[in-house]
Image (cartoon, rainbow, N blue to C red; front, side, top):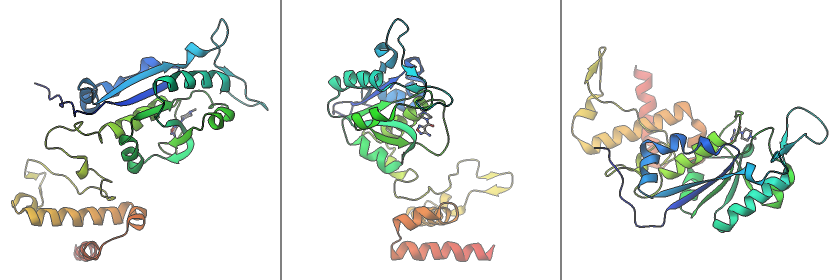
Amino acid sequence: MPHVPKSNGRPPWRATVLTLFPEMFPGPLGVSLAGQALTAAIWTLRTVPIRDFGLGRHRTVDDAPAGGGAGMVMRADVLAAAIDHAREAEPQAPLLYLSPRGERFDQALARELSSGPGVLLVAGRFEGVDERVIAARSMREVSIGDYVLSGGELAAMVLIDAVVRQLPGALGDGMSAGQDSFANGLLEAPQYTRPEVYEGEAVPPVLVSGHHAKIERWRLKASLGRTWQRRPELLERRGLSDAERALLQEFKEELKKD
Ligand code: 4HQ
């Protein structure tokens, strides 16, 4: 039987997405961990169809860019009307515009958003939205990474998924977001399962030793080592305790051996 998380006894965290493509939702947010948390009322999802606020017989939402150039731009008046409508139900939630020009979304922002009442997300299409509505409605611009998507919907889903897994009760019993990569500012240690030998490669013996203190030490050393090898800027940002510095030194010594 599929595991359904129990309600956590708080009011649900509320995600509202303004979009021209409400049929994209819940999409991947309706299955697995996020979907089970949605079923368990740990969070709620509402879409606001921007087209409902479009102008005229054709419900126009966009127009040509001022100054010329390719593509279309979402109209400030139309988007502001959609935002003002969504705000009535959501007076407290932060208003975010997904855009490659925004501040980078990271685990710290996921955690910050998970501690609030929810989010109002604007998922733009076309070449973007009229700059004046960003200022007029004090939108915080957030980017999920340095690449260009066809619209903000997938970015909104990424953000929501990362926040939902931080909500109390969203992870199954015995699981914890505290063990995830970035939870402690480091990349996770490598993972193994059976078989104990696969194509001649054994699981590191300490992991099958049953010695929990040694396992924790091995994992921290591996985390520090991987982060140093792959994402040194994360270590710079986070800093190291004396004990961690010593463990990382051990990792580097072991590298020289093999
Ligand atoms: N887009 N991080 C352009 C993104 C994006 C990103 C969303 C494409 C907004 C207008 N959003 N639209 N990267 O690429 O958040």
